[in-house]
Every structure is written in structure tokens, then in C-alpha cells.
Image 1 (cartoon, rainbow, N blue to C red):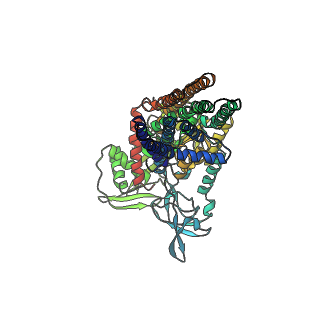
Image 2: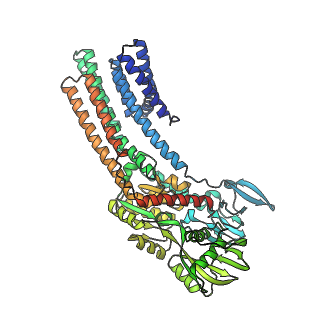
Length: 638
């Protein structure tokens, strides 16, 4: 925290204030007391004073400068303690905001996944390492297992499977061989391939999505807290009124000291300390509460925006579903038991890092099946895996036709994936895998519908599988077959109708969606650099279950902020009226002003003690699930 200048300034100001007050009250030598107060003013007031002067150069009067003027005014009429208290409170508020924002941004930065920067270019039969940005159309590059493809191009040689989930959002790798297209940023599987570059690195599909995100971010309205929208005009009114109270009576022969005292009292009691702190503490408290529940929000403005949403758009794969396949059915074809077939397949797949192979092994472990010993394991790029159990050759891989054809077709119609287990090249069974919906998804969707609005499901998947998922979780509106730009267009259509949309998605393909929405939240388990940067926050665990309580928390924070604003306004009006109509003692004015400031601050921070976010068993299971997936992502190449 001490690396933040706002925190250092506030800490030093508080330290000097804590030394100056007892020294003043105990009658210490005045030069020492004055030096301590001056140190408090300088350390706590330098940053806001500089910020205010910079704003003034741009013909803008902000509350930072007003606070400093009020504090200096108090010191000018001998109220050094009151002015120092103003400085300390204002500096502490800025430090609190800086800490919360820095913590959130640091947590989000830790999620970002760097894109590949180098490529293995083949020139004159030799490989050389070059920057991916320096590749030209016609170059050939070698892409080894587990590497990201550096450019859009066509496979010239080799076979592999490519994890294109960053672009498409779909979790299953796609087989690629000579003549097939591949795209920059996608992940190569088990085979080594040579790729001819077809597009300049600046014109790749990945770059196009990045450009679309940038355009959406530029056209997205800049968020400002409500108090900041009225801050400048209010500050101008206070300064003009204070000057009028000073100059007007003097023109009619009033006593200078009494007139200056009244004007300074007015500036202090009218200064918007309580108004500023009425809004920030509850919003920052909401950011902190959300962070403890696995939702990282980038700044306090996101909380205000969340309180306004009245429509929800959800990506399917990785958001509504888990984003990884699981074994749904084990179907023997030769009379052996399902457990025998699964154990045989898992024994061979144990040596594989393929996403389907890991799903098979996970299911076998869940059933605590003993696995036979395998030797001569081999990965067959784009085909599957092979191993020898005893004297039998076991192959697990993609269907090629035969007697299992009808069942494979049925599984595919249902949006599932089927792999065939063969013994000595004879099919002996099928494993049907599917990307299952998240635990408690239907309940979470119903809660979102009650808290905000019934969500719309947006996906690049085919209509049939997408509709099946929608029916399972209770989503009535499903839009399938969408490209990234289509998802963003769907949100724009809702917003043109006056809706404020909360969108959630997990992959790079969802970055335009998140940038376009009023509030975009990236699902942290699968979010990449661009989607996290385009989003306003990150859902680290139980992404669906967090949406309803998050919206409720934001609305509660807004209610508290509005109540604080009303209270602060009543106190300011009362003190200003007293000062204008009667004679308000400066000490009483400062006391009333500071007490109202402290009260609204404490009222906002009470959200930390009673957030109103229900703890649920589903949330705990979601946290464990997120940890398991994070482990899988570290150990998996697809």
C-alpha cells in the first residue's frame, strides 16, 4: 500500500496531525506547533492542490482545490486544527479509493495471459526465431505442440488438433491438416505443423476483434459518479458566494475580521466534504465485498453502472456451461461392462493431455476404477491416442464410420461429442462427452430473472445444442450461430431500445460483447488478455450465482449513497442558513461539518459488515470448481 502516493501522503498527514494536536493542546512552543501543522498541510494537501491547479489551468474548478482553499482559510483566521482536520479527512478518503482500485487492478492483471511474441520462421530450410509482428504474407512458420499459432494461415504440412476456444468460445479442439485454415492466437495440440502465413499480422482475425473492442470502448459513454457531475458547478457557486460574503459587506464598511470569519465559516460549512464522501465509501465497500466473493470490479463507477442494469446477456460456453467436456455416457458394443470399457480407455488416455482424454481419465478416477498398465503409448495428431495393454492394441479416437455410425450421429445431433474405443482396430464401445452446464445454473438464472431481468443467451454454437442448453437452464431467448461482432450487435440492439445491459462472457471472442455492454464481466477461468481488458470486472468463481447478489449489492450501495447525499445536503443547508441568518461560531461550524462527514463515511462502510450477499453451498462448490479448472488449465495444452 505504501507504494501508492495517495497512501503515503495520507499516512504522513495523519502522523503530523497526531503530533500537532497534543502539542497544541498542551501548550508546546508555537514554532514547533506551527511546523507540525504546516507539515500536515503540505503532506496531505500537496497532491489535491496540484490536481486542483491542473484542473484550474483547464478552466475547471474541482473539489480538490476547494478543500485546500477552505483549509487554508481556516488556518488564516487561526483555526489551524480545523483546517488540518479537513486535510486529513480528505487525504484519507483519496487513499482509501486508491487502495481499493489498486488492489482490484492488481488482481485482474494477474489473470492476463500474454499473447505469443515470437514465431519459428522457416527460411532456406532452416528455422529462425523472429517477432510475430515481423511475419509477412507467404512466410512459412513451424508450430510445435503446445505453442500458440502466430499468424492467420493455411497448414502446409503435418496434422494436429487446434484449440480455437479463444476465438470461437467452443471448448473442443478442431482437427487440422494440410489445406485447413488456422488463426493467430489459437493453441496447437499434439502435432507439429508448418503454416503458410496468409494475412499480415496487423490484419488477423485476432487484430480485427481487438480493433472492434477499441471502437466499442471509444463510443461507450464515459462513466462519472453522480457527485462528480455536479461537483464543478457546486464548487464555483461556493467560491462565488464566499467572495460575495467577503467583498459585499466590506463595501458597506463592515469589520474586516468579522466579515472574513463569516466568509471562511461559510466556505468550510458549504464545502462538499460530506457530499464527496457520501458516495465513495459505499461504492468502495461494494467493490471490497464483491472482491471477497470472487468478483473483481475495476473501479467504483462500475458499481453505479451495475445498479442501473435492466437487461442481461450471457455467453454460453464457459459462462453458462463449464467450458470443458465431461463423460456423459459409456456405451459398450461387445458385451463388456461400462466400467471395463471406461477403464480401458482411461488407461490409454492417461498419457494424453488432450481435453477429451483428460475428461475420460477424470471420470474413471471419479468412479475409482483400477487402470491396467499401458506401454508403447503414442499420440496420433488429429486422430486420437494408442497404447498396448498386455498384447492388445487399444485405440481411442474420432469416429470413422461403421456400426457405431448411427449412435455417433445421434450424439452429435444432441450437441455432444462421441469417441470410439477400438481393440485391435475393432470398435468395442463409445464414450459420449458433453460440455455440461454449471452446477446450480437453473437456480442462478431464475435469481437473475427476479433481480434484474430474464437473460438472453448468445452463442456461436449451432441452434440445436444451444436451444437444449437454454431449455435446461430456463432461458427463453436463445440466439445461436453468432460471430463476435453479432454478439456485440445484439447488445447494441437492446441498448438502442433504452436498456442497460449486463453481459458476461469468458473468451477472447466475447471481448466485443463485454466492451459494448453497459457493464461487461469476464469469466476469469477462461478469460484472456483482451476479454479482461475489455470488461469492467472479472467473475472468478460461481459466475452465474454471483450475478443476482452482485446486482442487489450495487443497488443497495446506491441507496446508501443517496441517503448519505440527502443527509449531507440537509446538514450543509442547515449550517449555511445559520451562518447567513445568524452568527455561526466557526468551531461549531467545523464540528458540524466534520461530524456529518464522518457519519456519512461510516454509514457507507457499514456495507463491509452487513453486505447482504448470501453465502451458499453452491458458491463454495463453485470456488472449488474454479480451483480445479485453474489446475487443469495449468497442466493442459488444450
